[in-house]
Image (cartoon, rainbow over all chains, first blue to last red; front, side, top):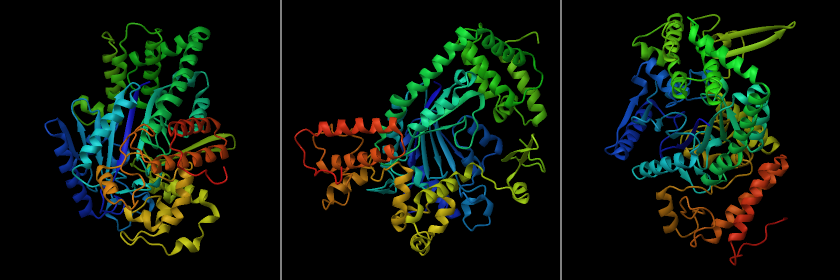
Length: 349
Length: 204
């Protein structure tokens, strides 16, 4: 059970959605939202980033921290990417868009001009959907007090994509399920989720793969249920089940396949502490195995926090931020291996 | 990951098995297009949704019915929506109301009436415009059936919503979900207590 996230999709009344807005309108939306958010933040520390003015590196780093989506980083909102000669200004890269997030915890972030004008997001570690929702609910109220949302009494909050209409709320949880994967039971867990009308995605949400055995579970429908019902479906009904499946799978590994388990964990550790070149696709599953090892007490003497931090730092943009300069792919592989060896405390290597 | 043909980032990945051998291709969108491969990047989930919704709608949405419909506000046509899966503005929802309702019902498993949170401004309007324009009656995130001032229309709506969802769940053989909906329904119907003002649902 890694993290819980609640996302609310909102749009301003009286202006087209981002996929149809003109360049001028997009800028206007950004300005309006900025005003509202600044007022809401009051004295609180909030960082605002105008994404159409930031470097690709900065944008990638924000994606890696789960503060913005890949879609917002890229700036392409219109789904018809193949016919980008459309007149709509927002379908080209660089349409006005931004993100605001709280410092230093980054638990609350607001994307401006992604698929919807506003995407409010609240993240908590562990299983705390209720807390995450309470926080975002409050911010939603505060923002709404300074600007008007597009809302319909029957259809609820109006969103660009009809699959988000109604509550506009998506509750999701990120789980680490190496046990299920190793015992060949991931499909079973996914089926249980789909049976409850939930979707399962990878580490970076929509369109991503399940790297390192990290899976994101979220509700699929948003209309016809209250926010509380959606939250409970996830938190009370489906997640405990998946967590229990994983727990049992891990128990099986420890009791019946201990040699295999130890081998996998120590091999991972071996590569991580000795490799001179590491690709991120390679490093992530290895770190995932080490993480499992630590949690199950198979790997000793390593702090879980170090591994969790490394999962972020090995990402391309963060690697370059740590190095303090831009690195091409080959240099990144060297830097990644060095960073990993260093953080895992291998001094004599 | 770089495109096989150029320096761009590869977003289209094709895996084919040819004569027992795996053949992988990694291309960027433009090279993929040139090779005639259908690109479906993350941005086109909306497109996929649009297609799925249209497929689900079936014969009820005839080409003729949706052809001429254009949103008066942003000029989006229904055809454009079908392709992108995205509405152009708030007014599109009213403009495309008819073809949309079937799609919404299927996408949200029977859900057709919003019963969740309502923005404060709407809540105020709902109370003032007592002509029944806002069925949600301005209830904020109050849990159903708990507040004494919850008018019968609120509960009736929720109950009818839940019944529809129960039907849908059973139809799709999602028995676990059906059980949850049934439990929620029972809870609601019980807390109604003496206020049994709603008529029996048709055909139940």
